[in-house]
Image (spheres, rainbow, N blue to C red):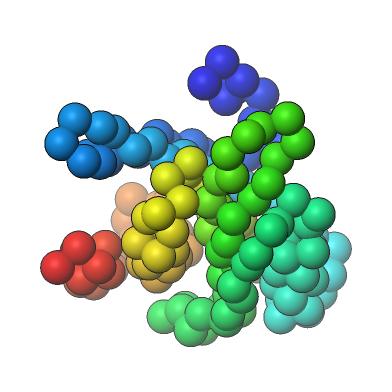
Length: 159
């Protein structure tokens, strides 16, 4: 918690903490982050593929699942999820990461959901995929017409 502000030095533009009931008196925690990195690769599919490979090839992954996601925006998107073994930390942690690109092709977006509650890995993966489906790129101009609201994939996961 003390080092969250240092994430900005790593291109992290947003973080959120999640607190979820676990058992009769427990609480599971998770950390969501959004990272935006410049990219010099003109091919967005290649940018996403390289990012996904770099994530999956990290020496900290002890197991991982990878798959491409079909987004409403039609932008290339890949999800990598699994457990991580961090040096000097006894317990493994779970992380799901989604890599996609901004429509301008100049920025890579990485969405992360991390938790020590590895038993909820499948649910966390579904939640992050649902969040990825809500990513929209729109003109922030107040005069722009409002987009029609879509149904929440997070609500679908919870039902």
